Image (cartoon, rainbow, N blue to C red):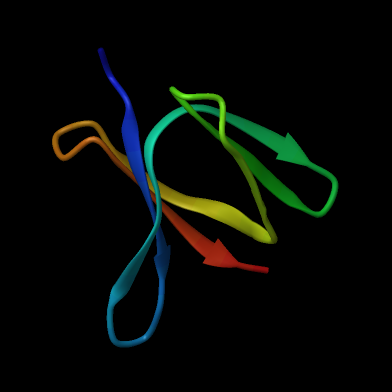
Length: 62
């Protein structure tokens, strides 16, 4: 399995917003994260970077 942990980049730290992200979908005003359990979270952000080495996706607020 290759789930990601999603982090929102902040000046001081990276804040975890969702564990076990399976799907990332673009929206007109942000992105929709869906976990392996089917939980969804819509965030007004864009993808800053993805690290396959740490299974992380880093987001920045719009």
